[in-house]
Length: 294
Image (cartoon, rainbow, N blue to C red; front, side, top):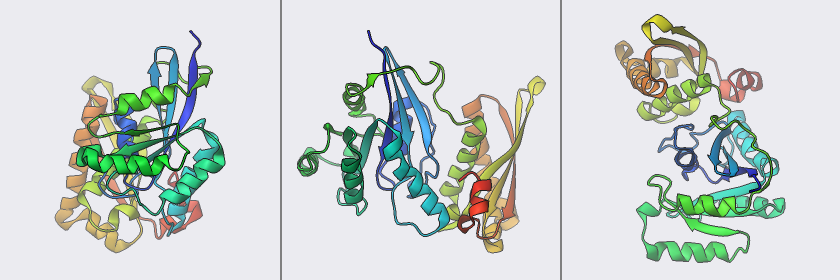
C-alpha cells in the first residue's frame, strides 16, 4: 500500500472551535481553548498517524480585524498557511454562518486553488433543520470537496471528516516519527497552559494584554519534581496590580490551576513560580513581539 501524507490548515473566524478540533483529532491537548475569542496566537502543528498515512494539521489563529501588531502577526500567520499546506479545512460555527470573516476566507481558499473542505462545527448546539440550510448555502459556493457537520467538542462527525480528508492525500513520506504528536517544545505547552488560566480567571482585556514566557525548568529526579519558572508580561502597572490581586490572590489562583493541569500533563509533581512583569505596550512593539515568541 502506498503511503500518503500531507499538511492541512485549519482555518476560520475566531472562537469557531479550531483548537478544540485539533485536540480532538490528535487525542491530546496541544492547543489551549477558551470561550474568549482570539485565544490562539501561534500556529500549532498536530500530527495524526494512521495505517498507511500521516496527516499534519496546522491550527491557526482566527482571522479577524487587526488592532495591534500582535493581532497583525496572528492574522498574517493564519493567512500565510493558505500557501504552505496541501489541503485547506475551513470551519464555521453552525450558529454564526454569516461571520464577517467568512467571505474573505472563501475568497482566499478559491484563489489558492487547493482542495478545500468545510466543517460546520457545534452541531451539538443545533438541530438537523438548522444544519441543512447552512450546508445548502455553502454547497452553492461550489468550492468544497465535502461539507461535513461536526461537533469538535463531542466528537460527532470527526471520523467522517478525517476519512474525507485522507482520500485527498497524495503519496508522500511520513514527515514526523510515529511517536511524535506536535513540533512544539514542552516549554511552549507550559506557557500556553499558564496563559489559558489567565483567560479563565482574568476579565475584560487583561488576557489579551498578557504574554507568558517560561524562563527555565529544573528536573529534580530524586523527588520526581519539575520546577517551572515563568514570567507573565503585561502592558501597564495597573494590569500588574489586577493580575497579582489583593494579597496576591489572583496570581495564586492562576498558578494553582496551572500547576494542577501541568501535573496531569507531565505526570510529575510541579513547583510553579510565576513572576509578573510590566513590558510597556509589548503588543505594539515589534522587538518585544519577537522576544515573546510572536
